[in-house]
Length: 106
Image 1 (cartoon, rainbow, N blue to C red):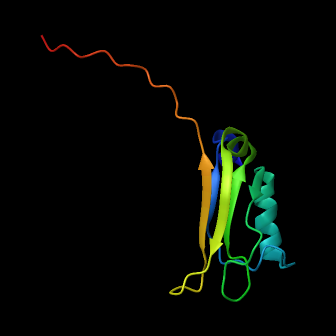
Image 2: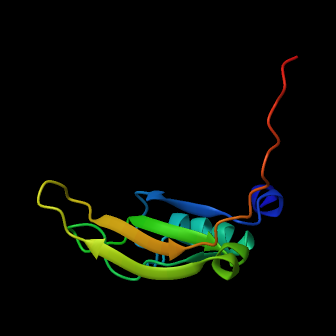
Image 3: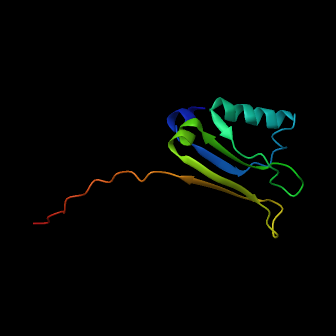
């Protein structure tokens, strides 16, 4: 939870190899409770594993969602893996960059 406080724009994604999020196993419930305690929202709703489970997940913080425009979320089966490919498109504004003054070395 401390990480979420220090990093308001947080994206966590990967293969968590836990039982499906919707299951009632203690490990999955404890994991989801810890993510929710950090105000992270889980975006995946479809199975990501050939066995029909959601093992690969994407979590985003509320600040991240409000700062960026979330686009398409794709869960795509791969012929060479038992896991699906997750792709999350998003748009962000390019920050204004200050023009730097040239350095003079004399």
